[in-house]
Amino acid sequence: MSPKNVIFKKTCKDKSVGVFMGKRDFVDRVDSVDPVDGVVLIDPEALAGRKVFVTLSCIFRYGRDDMDVIGIAFRRELYLSTRQVYPPLQDREKGVHTKTQAKLLRKLGNNAYPFFFEFPDNLPCSVSLQPGPQDVGKQCAVEFEIKAFSAESQDAKVRKRSTVKLMIRKVQYAPDMQGAPPSVETTKDFLMSDKPLHVKVTLDKELYYHGETIHAHVNITNNSNKNIKNVVLSVDQVATVVLYSNDSYVKCVDIEDSGDSVSAGATLQKVYKLLPLLANNRERRGIALDGKLKHEDTNLASSSTVKEGVLKEVLGIMVSYKVMVKLIIGGEMEDELVFQEFKRSYLKGIIGDDDDEEGNVSGGDDMAPKEK
Image (cartoon, rainbow, N blue to C red):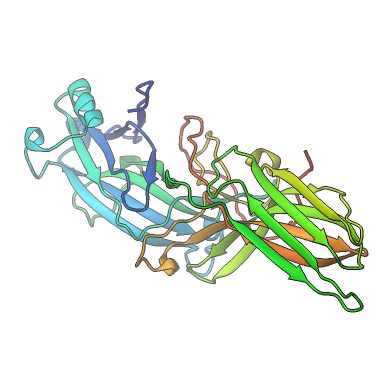
């Protein structure tokens, strides 16, 4: 359970089945993933002899439900696992329960039954693309869902009144150990100039967490006869939809237009600060987020870390970040340095309910965020 012992509860309309869970965010540490555990509370009279099942599903959604006008569903089920919880297939008391389940079973009584799922190692993390202000309907996303329902059998038609759904998130967590700080340097030669322009950029560390400032150490030695008019740094998010098209969407999530100049024969050594935050990109359509549950806040999507041997094609949306350094010479952009892809770990948002989210997303709107 969370430190405040918050329990997430939802019951279907006919009151036959209710789901209780101690958390809705499950951390993927690459080599292991938090298991999904919870408890189902049943009403024997409302069930009227029906069985109760619980499913864990992973869905990739790439279009609104109301776009399904020619028999094509704009969603793909990446994973589905089903458990029968009532009547139980084993003695409830003999099963191994988590601490959360044990507390819930004592609290809810004899009509409560536990369920447990483990994520396979080839599933993506929760990612959603932020809708534009005017977009309606389901957003493009990789989503996870717990569904409990009562039916005569697992394959029988399920009534909506006898079904309860609870959205959950599988979130990426960065490794605890820091690697070597990234560093890149390049030399640029110009026509009609005997000597080159040399640029070196180094970050202060390898991993960045949500809300942390990126310090970029820039060292420019301008031995050429060209004048550098401006130095511009940005953090770009790259979201690649690998499941169906391999399209990539690059969005600037922070920018520093320094106005610094370096005349011919001069040098510049300076530390620039960048702070990519969702708060400064709220209206940007197509920004990748760390999944989203209704009434809960979220963050810019964490960098995708893939376990060795897992095919990237099944991961839905891959996310990475890069810091760009641009030198503008004579009013034209002469050089672009792509020198770092950085990883972001997960930071829990605000607790809330989980009814279906609104919003559909497409590409576009490459304007940089407002300067801070």
